[in-house]
Structures are given as structure tokens and as C-alpha cells.
Length: 356
Image (tube, rainbow, N blue to C red; front, side, top):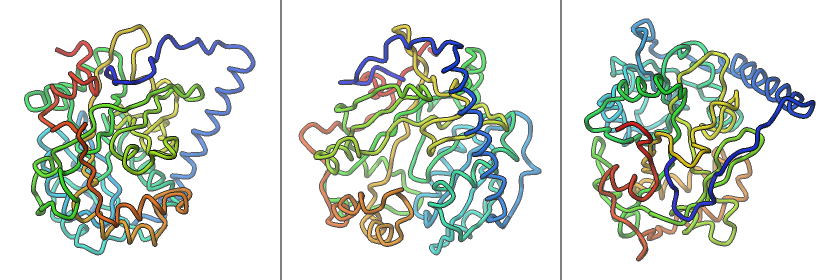
């Protein structure tokens, strides 16, 4: 990752060694990984294929995996942006959309679509379903796993497509790419923004928090844990440890034995989580532009509060949803206007590493 401002330095991590404790921990993580794969195998029965075009996938294709519900407004731009980066096939799970998302996706020739009405929460917030699809179709491919409100950017993204980036990562022996989730927001109340399907959301959500990020390394999986940004400031100031986790590892050269542990925040085996340098340098990283705060979030927050499908402890997040429903202004005097990846690199929110 980059030089996150106001962050605790990562420093040199201790060698876990090969003593009895380390070997026992490795065994526990291996069992955990196999358990996650077994869950995915069981949950595959919850998926119904609406259009399976995976026979068109070719060796070397970069694949994108999505699980979504009612995202017809975001989908046109999401698909076009990542096609432009070099994604060749999208494998999508639709969780009982009612806004036409499924019809929109069926019309895309580079999309394979599965549908389920099962519980998103009970399927590890969709990760069981995606793990099955990645196990079945992702092996040997660079796989990009996103939420529908995330837009990947990285150094030189306008001129260097994803295959150039993944070639660089392969040459460096780096099998995964880390990214910071960066909350974007408008300069006034959320409801006053205007956004039509296919519009670039960054033309409306023009602002972000350039500072107030905290980072540490979780010793068990050796993954980063980053919190802060607009949501921590606006919704969790009184309980910062409850703020959303912002670090993700969305791009991985996949093997069928791999599994995400918690959304795309961490993976097994643990070596995939070391997307940061420990020698004072930097590794190449990206940013996920988070477009959650489009105007539809107000009605959606009321619905999701009632459904209780997005958080392990929905009661803890009731006040978060209530504040969203009240149409907040997230802009502050400390907000920065988004201008592009070079700005994010200068702020330490992404890094070119050695990729120049």
C-alpha cells in the first residue's frame, strides 16, 4: 500500500518461525480454508444459472466476480469502466433483484449470471457463492472481486490496462494487489445529487477525506486493517473501532485452493495478504472508489435496515442507517476534491511501487 497519512508504520514483521505454536496456527488456518471451500461447495446448490457463457472464457482472460442486488443504476458504468480496464468476462450472482438488474445483465454478451433468493448474510455476505464460482472458473486467472459500488483505479489506469498491471505483478512475484476503499461523496446533502444510469458517479461524488486513516497489521493473517475516512468521521466518531474496514485485496491470481475470509479484506493462505512492504519501501497498490453515497442510498438504507442482511450484528448499525436516512452532508472543510490517481498517490493512498 501507499504511505497512508496519519497511519501507524507497518515496520518489520516478526518471522512467524516454525516452532510448535506456528505449526499449530498453520494447521488451524489450513482447516479454516478447507472449511470455507466446503461451505462454497454446499452453497452452490442455492444458485440457478440464468445465462452461463463461461465457455467463452479463454486462458489469460481477466475475470470479474460480483454479487449484487438492485444495482441497475450503477451497472452500466461499472461494466463499461472495467471492460475498459481489460476485464474479459463478468461472473455475477444476482440476489433477488427487483429493479431489472437481472434483465440488464442477461443482455450483456460478456456476462454469466446466476440468481438466488437465499440469505446474503447466511452465505457469508455472498462470499460463499463467489467462492464457488471462483473455484469452478477462476483457477489460473487474475480475478477481480468487487462490490457493485466499487470502481477500481490504479497508477496509469487510463493508459495501461489491467493485463499490463498483472504482467508486472507476475514479474515481481506479487500474486495479489491491495487497494484502499475510498468513500466519495457530494458537496451537499446526498439527496440533492442527480445521477442517471450510465453516468460516471465521480462527476457527482467529487469529494473524499484525504487524511484521518489508521492502519495496523493483524498478526493472525498478517493482513492490513485500515479504518477512517468519511464514514468513520461522520457515523462512527464515538466508536471508531466499529467503523468499516477499508483495506481490500480485490485482484488475485487465483488458485482453486484459495478463499476469502471476510469479504475481500483478507485471504487464505495468509501469504496473499502481504500487499504491503516491510522494508521501508512500497508495493504497487490501487484504490477502490466507493460510490455508496449516490442519492438512492436514502431509500436503500431504510430497506437494508429492515432486511438486516448486511451486518453480522444489525442492531449495532441501526444508528448508522438512521443517520443515512436523515440525508447527511458528508462534506467538511477538510474534504479534498478528487482529481485523479496522481493526487491519490501524492496523498499516500495508493502507490506505483516500482511500476513506472
